[in-house]
Length: 185
Image (cartoon, rainbow, N blue to C red; front, side):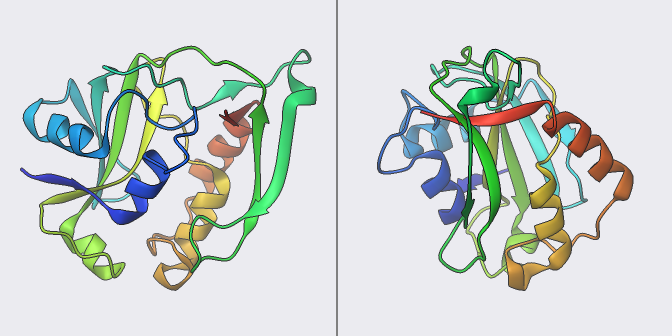
C-alpha cells in the first residue's frame, strides 16, 4: 500500500508560516516516508468506505488538536469566516489563541482512496492520499467538525466529498465541539 500527501493536506499540515499548531519537527517528505515505512498501530474506519485513519504514535512535538473549553480559557476563543482554499466559500470557524495544549500522544492521518480523490479532481499516484491529520491524546478519532460534515454533504463542487449527512453523527460532533475548540499558535 502506498500513501502520499495531497496538495490540500500539504498546505494545511506543513504551512509555509510553520505555525505552532501544524506538524512540528518533521518535513512533509519525512512524514510521507514514515507513513509508508511504518505500520500503523491500528486502522480506524472513516466516515465513508473510501476513508480510513491510521493510528501512529507521535514521533514529533506536535500538540493536541482539540482543547476543552473551560471558564478559565473561554476568553481566548476567537472566530472568523475562513475558507480552506481559494476555491471554497468561507465558513464560520473558531479557535483558541494564547494557549499551550499538551503534546499529542498520537498522529492519525486521514486517508482517502485514489478513486475518491480522482472524483474530487485531486488525482494521486498512490493507493491512498492524506487529506488531513488529527493530533490526539488517545488512539481514537475525535469527531469531525460539524461544518466539515455539512461541506461534505454539499458535494465535491463545494469542497466536500459528497457523503450525505448522518444526523446522529452530526449531533455527536456538535456535542463534542460545543465543549472543545481547535487552537492556533
